[in-house]
Length: 551
Image (cartoon, rainbow, N blue to C red):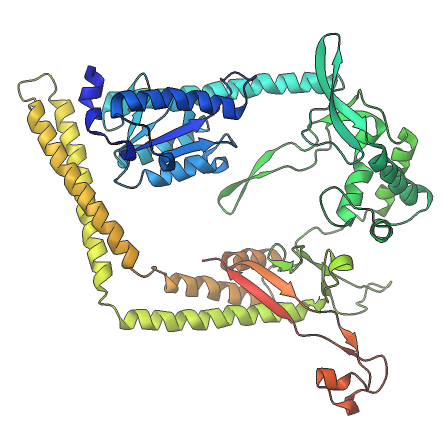
């Protein structure tokens, strides 16, 4: 066994104490599939494990990243790995190279390094072992991850240039073809490129949609109803929607064109979080494609001109619906606020909340005030419930489990500080007369690590039996702020919406369609017959709201 393996006591490692992580990278052979790359790397790591540990890594400790993203959030297997190394049972991660763990931004690099360092986990590669408690290993490991990030950004720049050039040549680079086309590969002058081939069955439906919209002057909703009634189905959903018709009518691919950067990814900051959006750009580039057109330029232009006439330019785009982004129908679609003004601008009737998919799911609508008031009642009910729970919690202040957890956490912090102090003392006195003998250093370090493992194990057991800790005081303040704001006539809808989202993650709306009441149906709905005077009376079914709180 070489010096490095002896230095890190690899001979004392058990296979069950090691996790193995496999991921394909852009630096790998592009001709190989993900499975082939992972199999090749698994063979390399397995040989290392058998030679140095005596046997293979257990299957439950092997993480294979099939869907590889650029960030930790996009890679489910690395998330499982990082969770697993928090356990004191896991002593090391076995990988082909450090860059397999992350080639994302510096935030991901920092997160991975902290988790590995503070969990005292070794990073083992076939050529080098990294102990992030060691200053020099820490710097070397950090350089490897940063170099991976730089390579990723360089590769993305090169690929972007190639994609732009490919689109400019008329190739189709999208992963999914538009409705009406099939994606295919064509050879030309010993070169292969991706383009589109007309799917006649779907193309006839596209032509039908344009004909109904432009020549027959039908609206999008009516087109949806006709297609659904004819039994024609879109590719993904079970029925046509206004949005799917709108997408087809705006898709320039049907004229034999291709475009670049129509939906450019943009990062925006909202409520302190970075969100990635893909808004439609006005200045995107259009090129002549190599595929055949389904409709003429004139018909496409006529459709765009009609859509321009139909579009309503709102004089005020300020948020009006306090429940926007919170209230959803039981079918999964959003509930939209609809107004019904007269020609003189006055209200014809109360504003109502209607499912965007109402033509298919047939959910009954409600007045905006009815749902709004019910949401306020829900907030008040939860505040009352939180106050009861808080009173119970205060009445039982002497919680033995909480006291034990606090003591264990304090002791673990002391041990971590003692370990760092021990390493700092060794580094400062290295090469001097005051340098600590290696056997004493290892003895002290092992003593600390043994106690750390014992404390962590005891802490885990204590947390398992402890009831979940809930900050009811914070919840009461948060929910009360939202309720007070919702009841204030001077607060803006935008502020009300933001505070409501702080308390409620999602509200699922359910209501059967109203029924017309006659003398024969009064008994079914328990309605007094004397209250029914004409056939025009309607009975509104009960409103049901299922709320998921944001805790």
